[in-house]
Amino acid sequence: MQWTEHNQSIDIELPDIFNFKNNLDYLQRDPNECMYEVIENTVIKLIHIGDLQVLVQLSVNNEDCLTVHFLRGTAPKSAADKATVVQYICEWFDLDRDIRPFYNMASQDDLLKDAVKKVQGLRLIGIPDLFEALCWAVLGQQINLKFAYSLKRQFVEKYGESITYNDKKYWSFPSCETIAELNAEDMSDIKMTARKSEYIIGLAKLMTTGELSKDKLLKMSDFKRAEKELTHIRGIGPWTANYVLMRCLRFPAAFPINDIGLINSIKYQLNMDRKPTKQEILNYTAGWKGWESYATFYMWRLRY
DNA sequence: AGCCAGGAGATTT
DNA sequence: AAATCTCATGGC
Image 1 (cartoon, helix red, strand yellow):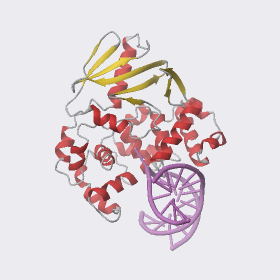
Image 2 (image 1 turned 90 degrees about the horizontal axis):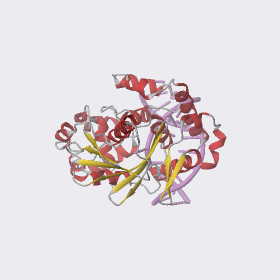
Image 3 (image 1 turned 60 degrees about the vertical axis):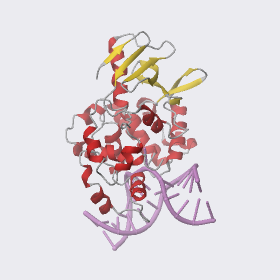
Image 4 (image 1 turned 180 degrees about the vertical axis):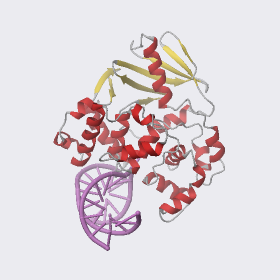
């Protein structure tokens, strides 16, 4: 991806099929989201990777360039740090992917043809940090999204770090080192069930020791192998594994097929009076091969 | 007030 | 293997 540096900002070239507003709409789907803030036509986020900590504001003036503005003098000094920030943002918005083949398929697909019109230019918004992606998936298991966002906010505000800008706090996700030290009871006051607490602490320990890492999963060229690696871990079933493979590791064929949001979107799109069975879903989505992750993400946006 | 929610693990069939 | 049960808690 091409990018150019300025004094307090960096411009990143945007790919074909990108609409900033439709991406921002996804980002502000819940008022309790605490990992970034959408203000007017921009989004502000604290990027915290290792020792690097920068507060950025993203905006798009015309649709071919994403501007990364560094707030409050947090501009990274070294070229390596700048590259890290650009890399993070490219991953976040999936800027390096050519999604034209997906659009060619989707515009002919009964389930997707309305979705690609409704949210044209939406990218599969990622969660580049593996620990964050795993925790978010576990938090979201079997509870409604509203409650999941509320839980995440309480978790982040209890164990994360923040910096203040314009009297607002911008948070970084709790580190696996911090969470690995906890006991399940420590989280009982934030409405986390004991079981979810155990899952998250277990994941934190695996990541702290390096037994589980993003690099290790990415090196598995066959995503079915990465899926198996994940589902062997307590607390990670097929839904969570595929959710993380989709939103963090970006395997395009990752497919959380039992996702209740996907099921309800299919029911909605096909105007069904009941939920589709698993076999029906497999039949309806047979044309998605190789783009299951994008298709699922687009289906999620259908009902909003 | 009761069903549902961007499930997983354990138990039973 | 596949179906069923249990777990937990808030939203609407």
